[in-house]
Amino acid sequence: MIRLSLAFLAIAAGLFPLAASAQTQVPSDRGEIALSFAPVVQRATPAVVNIYATRIVAERLSPFAGDPFFSQFFDFGQAVPRVQNSLGSGVILSADGIVVSNHHVVGGADDIRVVLADRREFAGRVILADASADLAVIRLEGAAGLPALELADADRAQVGDLVLAIGNPFGVGQTVTSGIVSGLARAGAAGRAGYFVQTDAAINPGNSGGALVDLEGRLLGINTSILTRSGGSNGIGFAIPANLVAQYVAQAQAGRTEFERPWSGIDVQPVDQSLAEAMGLAGPGGVAIRQIHPESPFAAARLAAGDVVIAIDGQPVESPQALDYRLAVRGPGATARVTYWRDGAFAEAEVVLAPARGSAGSESLRIAAPNIFDGLAVAALDPALIDRLGLPLSAQGIVVTEVAGRARRTGLRPGDILLAVNDRPLSRPADLAEITARPGRSWIVEFIRNGGRGVIQLSGG
Image 1 (cartoon, rainbow, N blue to C red):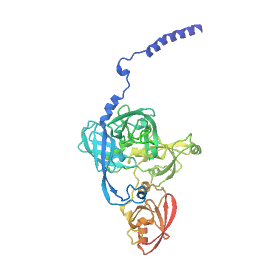
Image 2 (spheres, rainbow, N blue to C red):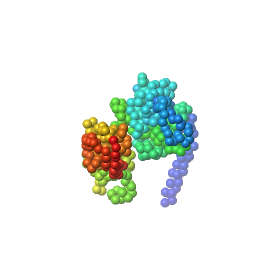
Image 3 (cartoon, helix red, strand yellow):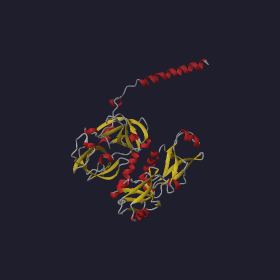
Image 4 (cartoon, one colour):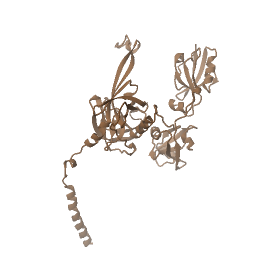
C-alpha cells in the first residue's frame, strides 16, 4: 500500500511540471494575442449593399392641416404626388445580381438604387416580394461577377454562437456590430408572425435587410426587426433564418413573382404539460392536431385529429409558427418526413407538400344589381381562400372577397361567410346573384364573422 502511494506521488510530481509548462507557454506571434473579426468582415462586407428606394405616394391636402382640433375630423382635399424615400440594406446572394432585402425597405418602390461596398451603383428591380415574411428578392440590372455570400444552415446555429450584423444604420455608412445568437426558434417575435433567430448584435434603423453572419462569413439570417421602446437598439434583434431565405431565392430564380407556400390544412395547438400528461407524452413538446381538412396533405398521409406532430425532417415543431416555417423551408413539391405521436407510440409518415387548391375563375363573381349589394364580390370557399383569409378549416359556403361601390353600405367585410339571405341558404355565388337580382327593398343576411354568427337587416337600393 505504501509503495503504491509513493508511486502515485512520483507520477503526479512528473505531471505537474507538464501542466505548469502548458500554462506558461508564450504566444509565438501577435495573431495568437489579438482577437479580431477582421478576416470575417473582409470576407462578408463586399456582399452587403446599401439600398435607396423611392416611392411616389398620393397625399391629400386638407384646409385643416396643422389645426390641432379640426385636423382630427377632416381629411380631404386635392391629391398631390409626394416622394417618399427609404433607406435600408441588402445582401448579394449570387454573382449575377440577386439581392435579398426586407419587404418594408423596397416594397412598392418606384425606383431602387443599390450601392455596393466598392461604391459601384446598380438599378434594382423587385422580382419577388412577400409582405407577410418581410422578404424581397431584387435583381440588379447589368450585374455580373459580384461578390456573394454563402448561406449557412440556420438549424445548426446554437445559442451563444458569435455573430456579426452588417448594414447601414441611420445612413452613416456600412457598419459592423458583434454579438451572439441570443435565442433560436423565436415564434411571433416583436409582435410579428414568423420564425426568427434572435441576436444581441446591435441592429438599428437602416440595418433592415442587412446580413447576420457567422464566424465563417456565411449568411445566417436577414436582419428584419428589433424590440425597442426608444427606437434604437436594446440588444434584442431578430433575423429571418437563411434556410427560409434560400427558398425565396430559389422560387425567384425559377421565375415565380409570388411566394408559394405549402398548405398544411391542419389546425394545431402547442402541447403544454397538462396536455402532454393527458396524451401520455413524457413532457411538453410538439403540436396537437385539433382539426384537419379533408384535402390536407397530412390527411393524405393518414394523420388525423388527436395526433401530435413532434418533428419535421428531424427538427422539433413547438408551435404553429414552427410548423409553417418547416413546411415553407421545404417548399411545394417536396416530401417532408413527419414524426408524430399516436396512441402512446411514435410513428413516421411521408407528407407530400403542395399549395392549397384554388377555385376556378367561374366560381367567383361580382354582384351587379340595382340595390345595396351592387359591387359585392363573393367566391365559393376552397382551401386557397380558407388559407388566404384565415378561415376555419370547417368553413363552407360562399365568402366575401371584396366590398366596393354601394355594397360598402352593407357593413359586410372581406372574410365574412354568407349563410343565407331572406332565409334562403347560399351554397354557391350564383345563389346570391339570383336572390339579389329580384326586386326587393329589405334583406336579412345571415353570416359568420371571426367564428361568430351574426344577422344584419338591410334596406334600400
